[in-house]
Length: 278
Image (cartoon, rainbow, N blue to C red):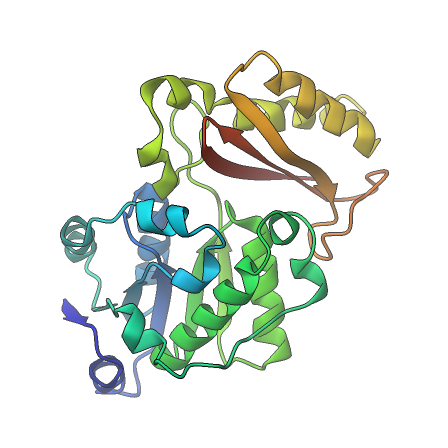
């Protein structure tokens, strides 16, 4: 496995044999089984696999969150070696963003609700860094998790709008045995908060059960999710949404498919999760 920080080194390795197809998994590190499931799928579908590990400063609207974001590069690299990854890019911020950096990629309408409303500027940071990672690797396929549902929708729009020559693959959310979606942020949960964090998945599954029982009114499903979180005294809701899975417009009634999503704070840590109905 080759590990490089410099862009020129990554490109040289990537293009050593132009006949090989590449799969790419962009990450911010502290890898878990969710990331590794993306790596394995990339390995199954491509001749070469690349991974980026970069905690992207411009997608954080809270600098304390950036400082406290968990990191363990050596552990990450050992996990990737075991998975047979071919190339890992581990740049520093000054490599990704030069001192006079002033160019950003911004997807508009679908970045405004949900996470975009809660975290102004977040998606501009995401789309800019992902566009740069795509440009450095130039993969045939790129793999993202459904856990960050809006991010996947936004990046898919960017790929389509800017004519990136790659296939975007969205893979199912990987969960702990109690249903909590795997996330690098979970490492920051105290034992008490970790026990309460299951309320996200319970809220989603309660709404899913109501849907299968015949509920089609979005307000009803939101109410089910909200009431499911009420017994969890450490949980504070940021938003609850029932939206179209592609446009992210809020729905009043579900005719075909819908994206259920919610964000909440447990103590001071913000967690998100989602589920697609239909």
